[in-house]
Structures are given as C-alpha cells and as structure tokens.
Image (cartoon, rainbow, N blue to C red; front, side, top):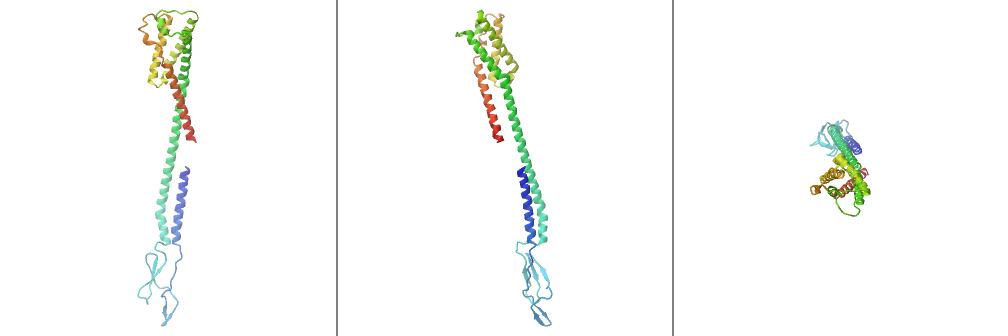
Length: 278
C-alpha cells in the first residue's frame, strides 16, 4: 500500500509540473520590434510609430508586420519554435491531463491489487503451515508417541520374560508350553500391553500415511490377537500353520523413523515461518 500511495503522489506531482511548464511557456512577455517602422507624416519621415501597423499571425511563434515601404513583410519572432501560446498550453493540459490521471489511477489500482494478492497468498501459506503443524502434532501425540512407548514396554518385558534365551513366545504357547510363577505374571503383563497396542492400531492407524508401516501394523495386530488366544488356551497346536503370524521385528525401527521424520518436518516449518516473518 505504501508503494501505491507513493506512485499516486508521484503522478500528481508530475502532472502538476507538466502543466506549470506548459502554461508558463505561454506566459512569456511578447517582444516588439520597431525595425523599419518609420512613417510619413506630412511628407516627412519620423522615427516613431504613432499607430500600430497591421499585423498578421503566422506559425512557429511569429507575427508579420505589414510595412508599405518594405518589399516583404517584417517577421517578428515571438518565441522559440518549441514554445506555444498560453491558450495552446491550456488546450494541451486539457487534452493530456485526463489520460495521465487515468493512467495513474490504473497503475495505482494494479499496485493495490498486487499488494492485496500478495497479502492473501502470504495468509494462505501461513494457514497451510499452521494446519500442517497441527496435523503433525496430533499424529505424534495421539498415535506415534503412545505407540513408541507401548512397544518399548512390551520389548523390555519380553526381554525379561525370555531371560536371555531366544524363542518365539507364540510358537511355544501353541506347542503346549506352560508358564508359572513370575514367568506367568510377566507373560500376562505382556498380553495386557500388546492388547493396548492392538487397540491403538485399530483406533488410530488412520493417522499413518506410510503404506508399508500400515502393513506392519496390521501384521502386529494379528500377532497380538493370536498370542492372546494361545495364552488363554483357546488356540493350540499347528505351530507351523501360525508361524507366519509371529511378531514383525521391523515395526519398532519404522515407528522410530517416522517419529524422527515428523519432528524434522516440524522444525522445517518453524524455520520457514520465522524466515518469512523476518
């Protein structure tokens, strides 16, 4: 808006200066000449003009003085060839002024529209960035953050439960292995945590964009459900049949990578917002 106002002032001052220059050129004093202007009075010649001889206007700032004694009329240069009379100056102002004013108005309007468009674009970009930040925070706080914590708890409990021995808990349960004492308590606690993970996957997996990650989450949910059935004794035997439903080990690294990516994007949006504001 400041640029538009400056353009308006500049245009008005330019028009005023132009008008003054044109009109002032037509107000210069008109020189007179007495060259060859003697007149016979009573048969004698006098060196002064007692009456103005007839004149004839001509172009290029000249007038012609008709002298009976001269073979040719006397031409008197009133102005330079580039000068014009006051009446012509007013005519030029009337002819040229309105188009100039209209042009300035058009330029001011275009500048105002350009500034308005730029302001609107900036506002929309800011809104888009803010909406994206809100979406990322929601995904982090309602799904990825809780998922990361629950998976970490499940992993730690599983390490304690296995006690340094590597095996697949689901396959052990299907094969009929029973657990008592502390092992049974730890296993029940693992089932509780994995049930919470399954519930989170079912309710909030729509916040996940990565198709590969969604596939892993589905595999994990299936594993947790079958594990719960095996622990309750409802599902027995056929361990080979359910071997493909073991826990997907790649799930935790993919969750960690996605959280890192989302946090990095939040940082980029914050830096962009500060840069544009400055």
